[in-house]
Image (cartoon, rainbow, N blue to C red; front, side, top):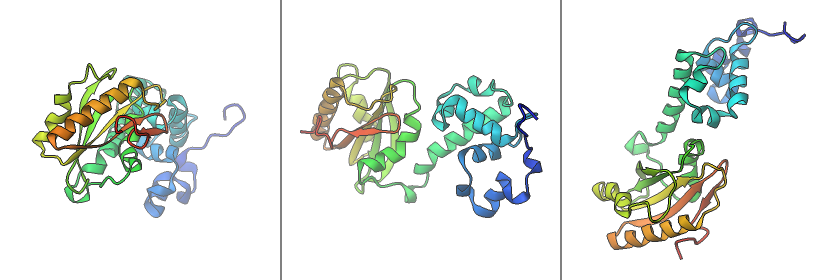
Length: 233
C-alpha cells in the first residue's frame, strides 16, 4: 500500500481480467495500450504491476511515439525496465513499422494522401531530425518500397535530385510519392519545401516517373502539398 492506494499484482486479478488471458480470449484489440505493453513487459516491480509500469512509460515519454523516439538507454534506464524489457519494446515497435509492406501480394495501394499518412505517420512523427523518404509505386499504385534519401534540414539546394530518382529508376517505378517530417510537429510547408517539390516534380516529368504528391508529417497532422497546390501548379 502506497499513499493509501492499494496496488494489485496482475496475478491477483481474476483470470478474465488479466491482459494476456484477455488477449487470448478476446483478441489484442480488446486491450488498451498500457495493457498491450504489459503483455510485452510481463512483470512489474514491487508496488507497481506490469500494467502500471506500462502506464508510467506512456506518461514519461508522451505515448507510444515518445517511446519509439527515445534512445534505447532512456527506456532501459527507467525503473523496472532493463536491457531485456527495453529490447522487447523496441523490437515490437519496429516489427509494427515493417508489417505493412512485407508480402508483395498484400502491398498497400495508395489512393489518397490519407493512405500515405497511415503508412508512415506513426513512425515518422517520432523522428527528431527531418528525413526525406520516397515511396516507390508500381503501375497499380502499390507500394514497392520506402527509401530514405537524406536526413537533416531539407532545401532545394542541398538535396540532389539524382539521388531522389536513382532507386526508383533501378526499380523501374511508375511513380513516387515524397514524404518528409517536421520535428517541430507543425506540418506547414516552408518555401524550401515548395521549391524542392517543384524541382523534383519537374525532373520526374523528364524521366517519365510521376511525382504523385509530397506529404509533410507533423504530430497527429499532415499536409498534402498536391492538395494545397504547392509545387504542383
